[in-house]
Image (cartoon, rainbow, N blue to C red; front, side, top):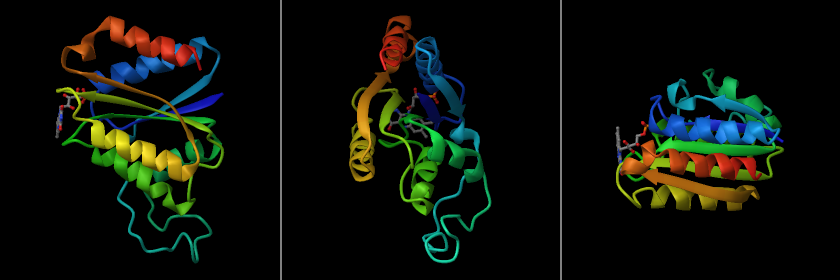
Length: 170
Ligand SMILES: Cc1cc2nc3c(=O)[nH]c(=O)nc-3n(C[C@H](O)[C@H](O)[C@H](O)COP(=O)(O)O)c2cc1C
């Protein structure tokens, strides 16, 4: 499978460790993995101008780093969304990367998706999980799993090994 991981963290700490563990497990199982650091890209919010659905033939009028992630939306069999919890939600960077898929409606090929969430406190990512589940329902993509780590779990080799094993099992 071709797997794209959209990492919404601007940092290279807790979420990045989860992303790396997932990528390692998936690669060990023979999958092709691409990590897209959307948290460090410049992706604006959708303007809602409908250019994409009128004159643009599926292309967005804004020229920014969306171009770097669009091939992954079009070609991946699985998309993994990863983010730290920022104020009970995914980061603004990841939200923008998700909402800009509006120009093509939904990922073209993906049939599976997973969510990796890192937070300081337990259960603060609940609304991000609900958003993710609703979005996948709308897109007709199967949710194959949600991994959420908080506090000290973020540095736990045992928890990262669980993520590695989860990715290996795909
Ligand atoms: C702007 C901001 C908002 C945050 N909001 C929350 C929150 O609502 N709930 C929570 O448990 N942690 C919150 N945190 C803590 C991060 O989710 C946590 O430290 C996470 O492990 C950081 O991941 P990272 O190392 O990939 O950046 C917030 C951190 C920042 C910088």
